[in-house]
Structure formats: C-alpha cells, structure tokens
Image (cartoon, rainbow, N blue to C red):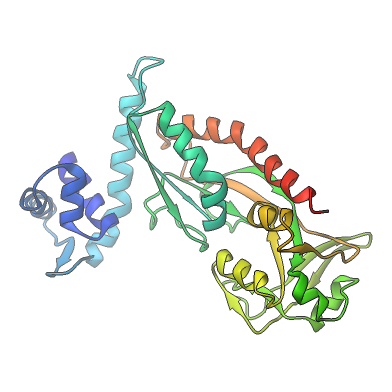
Length: 306
C-alpha cells in the first residue's frame, strides 16, 4: 500500500499523474493503476481526473495529510535502523520566502546536495506564508512574527532591515528626517494578509513606533517592490539580504530617519521533531551553521554604502 500512497501524494503535489509517473519512473498507466488500487482499498474516490488536470476530492483532501504522515513515519522507521554515518537518501522539501530563497537558501541547498548526492532538495519559494501541509514541505523558513500553530518553531536570527530609495526619488521629494515623514511619501509596501494598510515598525528611545504607511503601488512579491524602488517610484523597507547589492552600487540609498527599522525575525518551522527525517535534521544543522556567515556577507555589502 505504501507505493500507492507515495504515488497519490506526488500526484497531488505535482497536480498531474503523468508528472508523478515521470518522477517515480513508471508509466502513467502504472501510476493511474496504483491510485485506483488505493481508492479501491479505501473505498472512496480520492481524485477527480480530467484530460488536463487532477483535483483532490473532499476525501482526498482529508486523506492527504495522513498520507504524508505515513511516508514520514516510514522514513523515520528506516532512519532508526540506519547505521550511523550511512549515506542520506530521499527527497527533502523546503519552503521559504522568495527573496531569501533566491539569495540565501538556493546556494546553500546546492551546497548541501553536493555533500549528500543521493538527497533530492526541492525548494518551494513564495512570499506567502507557507503551509507545510499544503506546500508538502518537510520544513520551512518564515520571516516575521509567527502565527499560533502546532508547529515546532526555532528562531534563527534577527535580520536588519533598511529604509531606502533611489537617488532620483530622494532628489525630487521632501527630505525624510523622522519616521512620521513617511506619511507624506509614496511607500512601496508589501500586502499583508488581513490588513488594509501596512505598518512599518521602528525602534525609538521611547519604544516601538508603528508608522501606517501607504502608497500608490503595492505587491506581494519583494522583487517587484525592489524594481519599483529602482525605478524611482517610492520608498522601500527591505531586509538587507534583499537590497545589499543595490545599496553597494548606489542604485538605492539608505534613508536615515533617526530610528532603526525593526529587525525581521527569521524562524525555522517543521511539524514535529518526532516526524522529521534524518535528512531533515541534517539539513537543519547544516543550515544553521552556514546561515550566519551568509547574512553577515550581505550586511557587509550594504555597509559599504553607508
């Protein structure tokens, strides 16, 4: 039954029986037969199939997270009897924000895979907060405050943020001397789910200060916001890893407002230590060890512009 469950899970994740078949190195007909066999054993229909796509039924939605737990439990069982020092194998899925994934995580994932060539690392990158079940991820990196969930959370770092804009924008608009001056500027804010207006947080001698910024342009992709800032469209608040190169070459300039932007907290989250496979724990150890130097490298690039 395990083979059928794995085929079902990969079909859901890839939204295609053919794609799942290619990955599992079987024919589409064999993959389809496995899923039908699973449905027969369970007595329910798990997938609705069309010529273009497959979608989970209500029963499929309910069964999917349990199927993931079965696969992870089998991985854990294998790990319990695997000799120390044995070569890691299997698939590791990691979810992360887009910008962090491109600039920090992707090179690290490549380096980890080179050290463990039988592990397949698959990144799920999005600026939406990842749902470990929906994203089919073993673990995720999250930026900002964490919602109350049943996930295990491990704080990684408080990453500096910088307020910045292009020289053209700064030359053509009123001087920004304090955080409240941002109210008169076009601020390039990321859409925050559940909020109509974004609030940028600053650390002042009197405590935390929230500035309810607004602007004519808004996006949920950090790369789009950076492009707008480079084009002179407004003021941007971004983590240093996102804009260190643009600050270094002068395309963006830091904006001093007499208060430091609140750092962005990076956290690592995963379902539970009990369900995390050995390859996941090994990746976490590697990631935590390598993260600090890579963040400091981004900060040093930005410091050259100060």
